[in-house]
Image 1 (cartoon, one colour):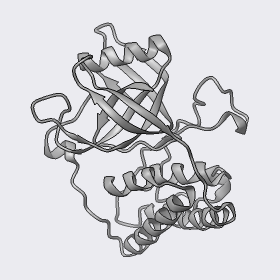
Image 2 (cartoon, one colour; image 1 turned 90 degrees about the horizontal axis):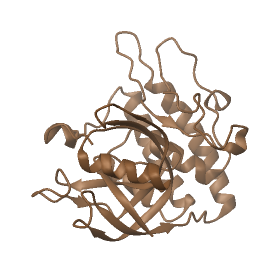
Image 3 (cartoon, one colour; image 1 turned 135 degrees about the vertical axis):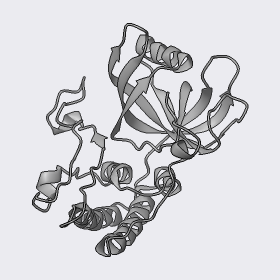
Image 4 (cartoon, helix red, strand yellow; image 1 turned 60 degrees about the vertical axis):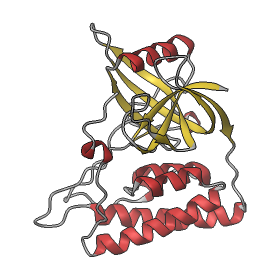
Length: 259
């Protein structure tokens, strides 16, 4: 199938909602196309380089996420604010940089293979335990500033919400404050499906982009959960010592990356 691409210095995982401010002419055109047709666009990681379609052509990851526009507001001058929800994965087969002002790609949707279902269930339970501890350690201690996880998620209609719009509560930004009680599974409204859980946690845990991309590309839910648990255990050790890996923001190094 053919979709427009929106390359970013960001990895989008299914279930995560991405707010975007669209002001470049090429991405305004892309947004109009998606709004007119109801078709998704593709969010794909810029592995190396800056702007795509300029003299310094970037290297793109081979796997990205379908993004469906859930909400859109248009300014009088033609800019847009949109909320796009990631609904699945695709592999890029080819990219056309000439036909439209934005990139257009032929992609193959990727199925979600679970692997061993019993092992997936056990790994999901372990991942939840470590994630709850991770959130607890992310809270600020005395003398520290509080870090906010600016993550928005989409709740499935099967959980009792309307299926035609993003639930406002589901798109809220989780905030971890120093005076909050330790989170529980009930507080987090964690999904029971191991595949949904694996994508959700992969999109929330604050890790380096190549590691998040590897989680997105995992061939099975079991493989993704195994990688996620390994990353969470690393983060628990670091956060327990009040340490974090430092990864420079490519957008900051090369100048602000905007749409």
